[in-house]
Length: 74
Image 1 (cartoon, rainbow, N blue to C red):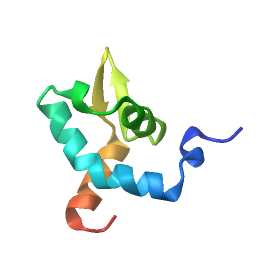
Image 2 (cartoon, rainbow, N blue to C red; image 1 turned 135 degrees about the horizontal axis):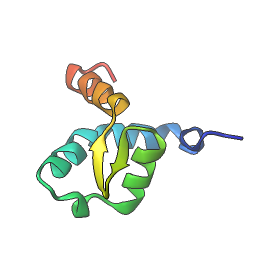
Image 3 (spheres, rainbow, N blue to C red; image 1 turned 90 degrees about the vertical axis):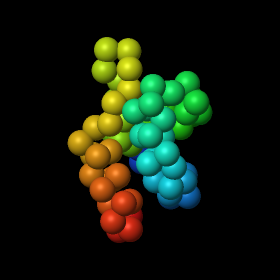
Image 4 (cartoon, rainbow, N blue to C red; image 1 turned 180 degrees about the vertical axis):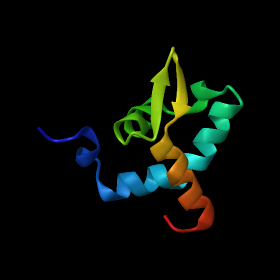
């Protein structure tokens, strides 16, 4: 069985990484409806976001990715 995140292409993962901080900002401002549904599915597949009681939240993996993006390492 192939992990869902393994099905994402490298350019798609890079595009998601590039928009991760903006997505997290939208979530913090309670504007998750402005995040494209396909992006949400892919973030969840990458384990960067997770559903929690009907709302999205950043996972530990996603938090680490945000730190890497902020540091310019990703």
